[in-house]
Length: 486
Image (cartoon, rainbow, N blue to C red; front, side, top):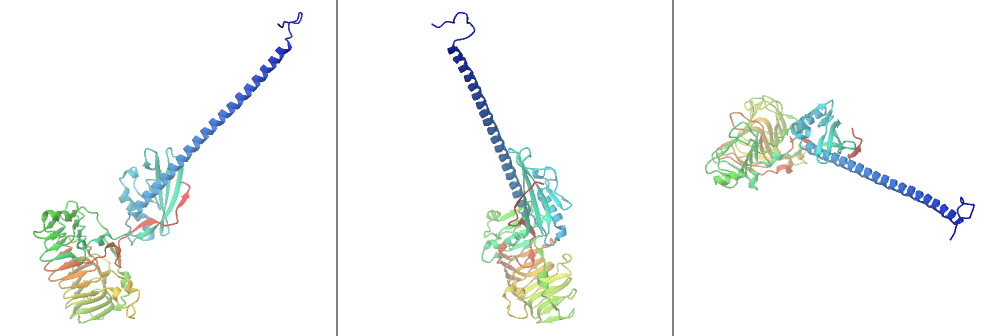
């Protein structure tokens, strides 16, 4: 047993001194480990916090990018629905775009109570200071800015997530594109009322559905009245409350059963775009002055690329032959008696408005027609570019057109202010019959007697020359850019 030596109580034995030293080293090591573990814990916390922040930032940017992409898709759809008249000059483009977008968007939830306006050449959707919600649960939103660059329009879209701190911006240029002419899917289409009587037929030549009828009149209680023999296609009207009258025994859509006929009657259909007519593509070739004085009756006349000055009021008897383009300048009353052979197209100017008294084209007797595409391009009398202008037979949007005799096969669509067929007027139209005037108190399309129309239209797969159905705007390939938010 170890004991302290007498007289030296303050000095521990050597072994005790060794134990004391060891206890000091252990404390130092413990503190070192404590510092190390604390440092590692802080590092792990910092790394975890930083990773979480990075993940939140990445999510915010992804949501912002998705919102920007969604906003651009929204704008792409809206710009694709526009109908911009082909007559709009570049200086009026932004006003036309704003007007079209206003019709589509004003009053919708997307605008948050704002209205579409052209402010100094800039259009904001929904406004310069507001956003449109993409996903309320995710807090995503977008805003759009439209400007003009020459013939193009430029769309910038910003997208933002919840809080709006992380934003993404994208830009695409849009180019003008011709709209499809849905009205060409109808055999007979009119801005006004349509009536048939007697033994008349409207018949699809190779497909019964091509013998369809549309009225865009919204004021008449009965815009379509079918009392002739048959209409092989469907009957449609834009007015949702209109009545379509079908007489007893009349066949519509291949049936004369009144209960089944209802399946071929449609009200409240979307209003199609009626064409803008530009006859200048033809009139450039009508360089020869009409050779007869006013009041002279021309017999067996042959006219090649001729223009008829206003107030000439030409009359043809004994058959007339029209080669190339016959351009009728308004006002004029043109009368064909004894038949006519049209190797080309008849067009009028498009100035002014409909005048069925002073602007008339009257066909009596048989009419034979050959489209421009069948003219001999090697004949020096015909410009080789003229024969490429296909799909139209008659473009007279401000004229009253009457037919009382057979008209054989017409090599293109017929566009007139009003059309009246009576007697034994029968023929095939390689296109559609379209009337542009809503004649108050009278029908815009009237078929009576034993007149028959056989429709052999090409629908929207073939746009007749001289017709335009307006323009919309589609993305210009290769113009997608990621840009700074505005």
